[in-house]
Image (cartoon, rainbow, N blue to C red):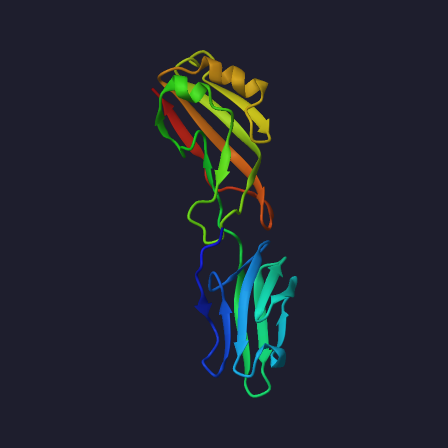
Length: 204
């Protein structure tokens, strides 16, 4: 599914350049562009350039632009009578929201948290549907009730699912425990990145 949102970035002249979803191109995604001319599609010549930028024609007046690097893309279109030269910024896809059981922190019953399988990375309310991130690794830190002697418990986890070490800590959790998921690394459009977010749960 796609959300039908069109932004016309060309100057009205009989030749129109429209980014079909946003006013920018996103790194690592296929960005649709519509280019129409008053003289017909067969007379329109198009060049889309930039560092790490590639494009292909997807149909009459329809193009798909892929961007490997951040920066600026230049779209040049001509129909023999008019020409357009437009610069479009290339941006990163926004960071996803880290969640456990659909929650990004806050109070949660201890028995509910203990049965969770791992950490998810959700990209909410983004104009491109179907874009996903995978959790590469994270650190689980547990303090409070049940950890009075040691003060805290820590587990380094590779992948999205709680490993044996993390599960052992979660079994000790009870009302009054605090669980923090930190150093969350995700993989998605544009490569792997560390989130600047951690999530904290207060068990009840």
